[in-house]
Image 1: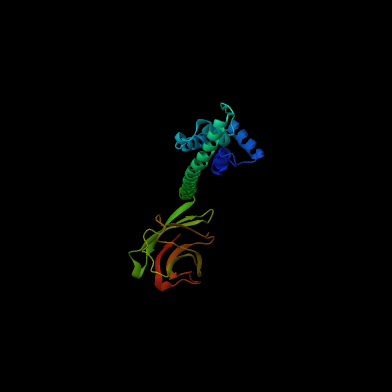
Image 2: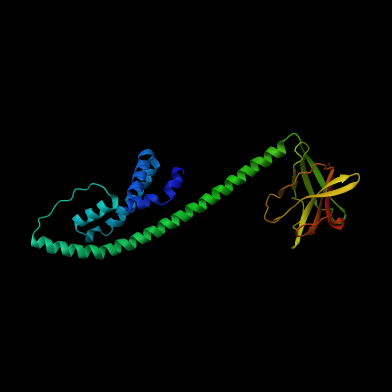
Length: 260
């Protein structure tokens, strides 16, 4: 677990609130000593709790406020001792009652802070997911560029056929690795319930082999699709088929065709 994951785990909040077992508390203290960012986060949490407590501190006797801080942060705090007189005993009872009332306010504000922390954590999770997605996009882009720039990759124009003369596409075929990528920018959006299917063709005798479907066509803004390898490709064709694809190409729906 890296330091950021450690910070996001919520253990630092429990440390500041004094809710950890001794072994866990020592572990956190070791992390604070080793990692400045963990120490900074603990200080930020402490500051937030101090601000929270300070917002009601005018209604608390100073000695009780110091005791609250000492309990929260488990730190050595010198508190001035008061004479044990009967008057101070009554004052002590009054302060205790006031502390109980004020603690309810602190507890409510603590719950509100916890809710805010939960929202922040949820936002952090969303940011993590977005970062993971962006990293994947960058990796995919790098992979595509490496493939397209390979000297063994050939760009094959797939021209529109008969009733679909306006359609066009391009197959990028690496004759060494036999990998295939389709640029379907020139194909219209398929009707609902239909999908484009890519065929690798062997010409003599004419033998079509499906190498993949161009699924989620509308959602793919780049219109670049990686399909299966084509070990014996001499030509590529794209037909429109029912969702799920077909075992053999529907020639009446042959949109594009091109020879390697």
